[in-house]
Structure formats: structure tokens, C-alpha cells
Image 1 (spheres, rainbow, N blue to C red):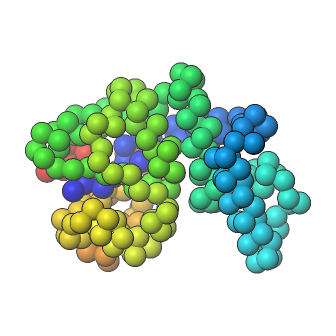
Image 2: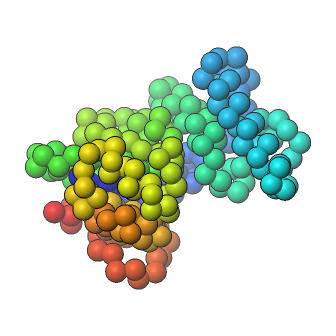
Length: 227
């Protein structure tokens, strides 16, 4: 199995930071106003409030409670908040559905996915973005709908990406030995955690990716370099 990160691996980091994040910041208030009474939104806001109370109890300098104020506080700090990621995913889904958003993938990604499917190699995604956000990113991409090539999606519900236990959980979920999984990411610390769990690893080096320390991981500049 091949397990792929998104930012800096399948998709330019700039698309996430310069398109997706600003889009969510602009449209989240309207989404909360229009969808606040729907079950999905109410559940996400309840989770958001629970995170807020935990931050406040821990002494974090959070603003006075309102969903919008706390969301902006989280986004300003690029926090990997599950509730934030869920709400961002819902807003991005609307953007993908109405055609405002089309995600970018590197040119080698469709060819690599096609090659792996032909070879019978299953592919999964592991990203800090919600599963909903992952699915829509690959469904409405510059290369068309890539979801038929993907068998699994994992987000931080399995744990943080720098937590060794997260990769052990993923291996258990897909019923594979850790050594049967190759994880590709642009962040050496994530690869270190995956390697400690027994996974094979490859560091994605793309134009615009932050430099990483030499941790002894295989280096690839295209997914087509992976056997």
C-alpha cells in the first residue's frame, strides 16, 4: 500500500495556503449563519465549543466565546483543530460543488495513481484536513475526478501525523503489516514517526516545499520515481 500526504506531496502547498485557507476564512461566517441550525453544523460547533473550553481551562488566550471569533483565533495559529477542519471541509465542499474551487495536483499524480492501480497497489490518503475535505479535493481536481484511484482516507481522528501510534492504527485499519505500507510526505518529522511504527518512507521534495533535515528517508521529486 502507498499512503500519501497531500500538501507538498500531491498538491502544492501554495494552493492550500493561498486558495483554500483564505476561501474558508471568508466563507465560514456565512456558512455558520446559513447552516447553523442543520444537524451537521450544530455537531461541529458543539465540538468547537468543547475545544474552546479546553483551551480556556488550559490558560490559552482565547477570545470571548463566539464560533466566528474562536475559528479566527484557531486559523491565525494554524491549529490542527478537528472541529475547525470539519467546518473548513464543509465550506470547501460548497465551493467545489458550485465550481468556485478546483484543486491543484502535481502533473505526475494522475499518472502515478493510474500506474499503481494497474499494478494492483492500493493507495490511501493521510492528511490533517478532514476526510470530507480530502475527498472533495481529489474529486474536483485539475486532473478530473481522482477518487476512483483512492481506497482509504485518514485524518487526525486516527491521531496526529507526528505520533507513531497513528501509523500503527492505520496499518491495523487496512489489515496490513506496517512494512507493507510506504508513506510519502514532505515533512521529515511525520516520516520519522511512520518509520518508527515500521512503515517504509519517502520524502517528497517539490518546488516551494520547506527544506527538511536529513533523516535518511528516500527522496523523491515525483511520485513516478516510486516503484
